[in-house]
Amino acid sequence: MNTQKKLLILFLFIVTIQWMVPAKMIYDQESIRFSGTAFKFKIKPIDPVDPFRGNYIVLSFDENTISKDGTENWVGGEKIYVSFTTDSANFAQISGYSRVPFTDTKNFVEAKVEPFWNKEKLTIKYPFSRFYLDEARAIQAENDGFFTLGDTTKTSYAMVYLKNGRASITDVVVNGVSVLE
Image (cartoon, rainbow, N blue to C red):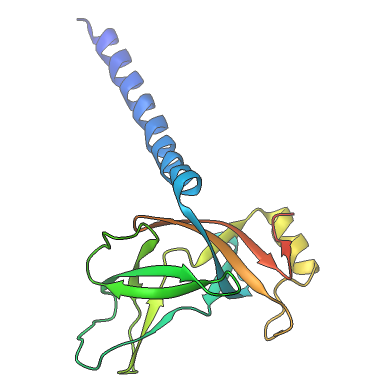
C-alpha cells in the first residue's frame, strides 16, 4: 500500500473517532432521558456568568443532606450513591444512600460527599449542579426575574432523569415556567 492510501485511511479513522466520541456522549444522555425516571428536585437557582463556561444556572438543592449514624466514617470527595423516591408533592426525596451502587432500584445517582463539619449530616454534591443556557435564553431568563434570590414565594425545581447511577438534567422551572421557553 502506498503512503497516500495509508494517510487517507489514517485520516478517515481519525475523522470517524472525532464523530463517534461526541455521538456516544449524546447517546448516553438521551438514553437516560428516554428510559430513566423523571424527578423534580427543589432548588434555589443562582445565575452566574463565566467567560470560560458561558451562561449557566448554579443549582442549590433543598434535598442534599442526609442524617447519618455517628459511627460512619465518610471523607469529603468520597463517592456516594443516593437513591430517591417522591414526596406527596411529587418532589424528589432521598430514600437511601450507600457506598456501592443499588441493585434493587434504578432511581439512584452517583454523587460526591462534600467536605463537612457536621458529624450528624452528610452534604451531597450532585453531578447535575449546573444547567447551561444559550446567551439569548439566559438574558431573557434574567430579565424575567427567574433568579431572584431569597424569594420564597417562587417554587423552583430542576427536572432530572435518573437511571442506574447516571443523571440527565432537562429543564429548570420557576413558578411553573420553564427557563427554556
